[in-house]
Length: 313
Image (cartoon, rainbow, N blue to C red; front, side, top):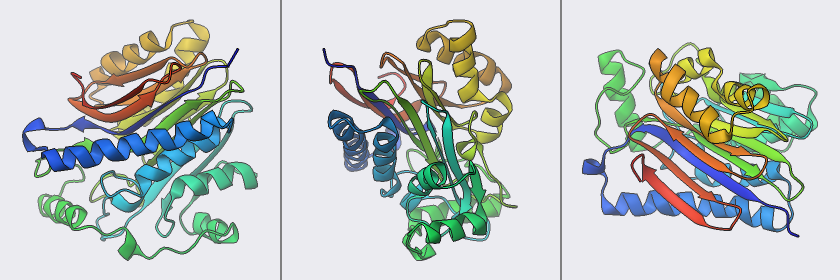
């Protein structure tokens, strides 16, 4: 009997407006989401480890300008890109993360190198990049990450003295930009990955939940894999990813109950907007969203593909 495999991904949650979503942009985003989830699933079908599957899925989204990670990252107050990413393997609770990297094309691949090839969990800034170059990563100029859309967003936010978007020119300007993936492989391993460019107009080397194990990312075999997306400060304070795992581990809640309790209850009551993707030890997938939309896709244990944008789909 074949053991179950499944995978789910997200490209960020928040206010996503149908009224401003052109048919062309919608097709492009849906296409990217489908390519990402299929890239990870193809590896699972070949018997690959869940860790490599989530990295493959996230890398597709990092390479797309449609998501706030990698190529599509937002700009800081000083017109730079500073990216965060984290990764966790559920078998031995191994983890790797990076924060504030500026010249690495795919931060999620660097997080995997931290997990596999260093004794540490979290590397930041120049040190993370020094490690990256020792690992063979290529120096990527900031010009690669620069897009007119992100520059327009930065100018708007700087003018208002804000670090989060207060008005929408694009259909997803009020979306909290993060990408992530969770997977179950044929060996029963769970893995989770999260990557982001952070928030527009951020200062002082701000780091959100995407780089923090237990906040934005968690995976534990036999329990759950989680990747979050939302207002990072709230997700850190609530330790959302680990809270889901704890409810499943100690209260024996199913993945649906645990996720909804936090996203629609305690987190929402704090003012935390966003969502998460979660996958349990049996390959059961759950998307929890307390905003109007979340870019998301999945392939379940039966091989069914699903790609969606809005919360009411």
